[in-house]
Image (cartoon, rainbow, N blue to C red; front, side, top):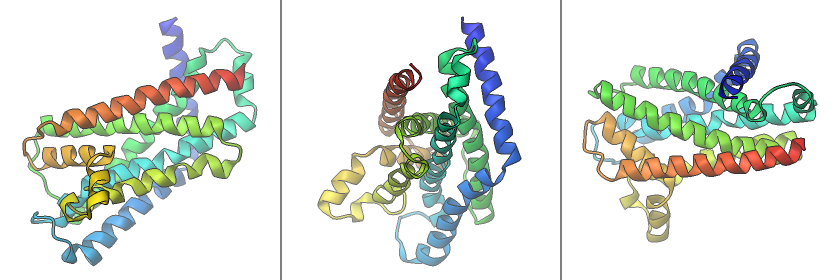
Length: 253
């Protein structure tokens, strides 16, 4: 059964990846917004923002990486919605394909596409002056957190794609996710925010994830932040997976 699942998932992931390769504008449009924000905040607002770091792009990059992922997962809900409306899922149901493989194909495609987008954004940040002395272990830690965050948001995207009534609704769910880093430590330290906003910023998932990635890049102790970040990512991932599977069974039954 597990071999059957792995084989089906690999085939369906390949199918979705071929769609992206035939339409590379998916990745291009995904990276445009975060790169534009990075250019805007570094070269226009950066001089007016005090973060206690020598380079504002070093401070900013972790939050921009999360915005890149939030932008990218919108395409998962969009493609999933189109497959549902086009009857692809109904056709798969008549074939000997593991049920969960259909969703995992979309999720793994999102993971690959977002990793490519993240590499592009990091490349632009390096051109803009981003520097880190992080070793292999720190980079692996950053990559692991970003992978977990991508999987967590992608399962939320699957929920949106399965429950949306229109194509606009399928992709619009990502707007709050893109906005969330703005009310966190991604752009400015939370200490500069007024009371209620500061409390929200310090207790939402983006802040702990951003702080952990920033500490890894800066070769500083991550403390308890990394466990908070992992708990948020895993909690959202697990909850999103189970809700998505329930919705999927209802849609195809």
